[in-house]
Each structure stands twice: as structure tokens, then as C-alpha cells.
Image (cartoon, rainbow, N blue to C red; front, side):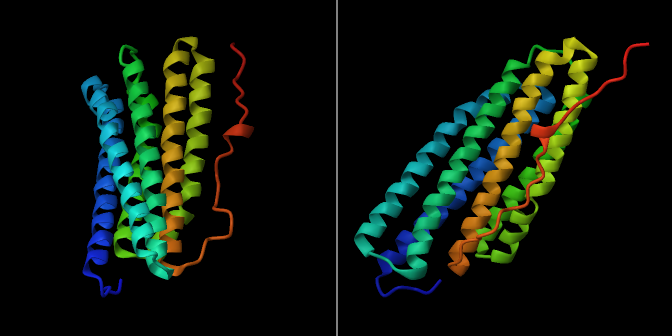
Length: 239
């Protein structure tokens, strides 16, 4: 980005960027800790994620206030205006990622007393790993102003959707085979949906990065692979 004749303007933009990076780091940690809490059945870690959401909310408020004040004071145009608008958009998506990580942790607390085979969470853990990768990549794309990397994240969203559909079918099968699995699997279904939605927010950020760098809004529908709404499950009759 070009430097401005008013040094304080550059300082305001630098502060805004650093706040976004800080917010992204918090969101990454919340998602990683929420998944670890699920795998390890760690209620204390899940509670820490829930409590930590307040920090993310505070950072979002700071970013929005700074961006609005800068727009009012500087009346920016072109790339400077895109930078400020993009910061508000990215902060909003990161705040929602935090909310979804918090909701995931609440589900972990809810199932903490359930005894179920570890294999039931393997698919959810794998999906979370993929989403964490997308979140890291899109935050790097934001910092580096790399629209190519952002577009790559945007195009990978269908993998997350397809995996969610597979998990959805698997958990339904477990519930139909053994009614004792219903409570635990229902929580896992909601938990998996939270993680899938986090993936959607990473693609939102990717779209914003592309707009920030190029000034062009992606006008085509992103790839989608979630067919869970059309899923049917059949089981063999008991012998």
C-alpha cells in the first residue's frame, strides 16, 4: 500500500490491520481449542473457549469504531476506502467464527458425561482440521494482500461441504442402528454444522480479500457440496 502524506492516516490503517491480525489469531485459537476439547472431552478447555469469546467481541467493536472514525475524518477514496470497508467485513466474519467456536464448545460441555466410541468424532475432527487450514490460509492472504491465495480458499469450500454431508449420513446411521447414540450424535450433528459454517465464513473473508486487492466483487456462486438436505439413510432389516 502506498504511503500517505498524512502520517497519522498510515498509522490508523496500520493499527486497523494489526487489530484484524490479532482478531484472526484469537479466532484460530478458539477453533483449535474447541476441537481439542471435543477430542479430549476437556470441559475446562471448552469453558475457556466460551469465556474467550468476549475478547473477540471487544476487538470487533474496536475495529468498527476505528474504521468508521477514519472514514469520517479522512473521507478516503479508492483502495483506502476498500481497506476500511474490508476491515469491517473481515471483523464481522471473524466475530461470527468466534461465536460458532463458542457454540461448539457449549456442545462439548453438553456431551461431557456421555460415553461413546472415539470413532464418532473422527470425521468432525478431520473437518475441523480442514477448516482450520482454510482459516489460516485466508488470514495469510489478507496480510499479504494475495488474491490468488484467497481465491484458492474460496474454491475449496465444496470439500468442506462434501465432508459435512458424509458426516451427516454417518451420524444418522449410528442413530438408527442404536438409539443409545441419539443424544450424542445429535449434539455432534449441530457441532459439525457449526464447523461447516466457519468454513463458509472463511470463504466470505476470501471474497473480501479479493475485493480489497482487485476492487472487483466475485460475482459467481461459490462451489457448494452440502447435500445433507437431500440425504436419505437406509438400513438393512434385522435378521
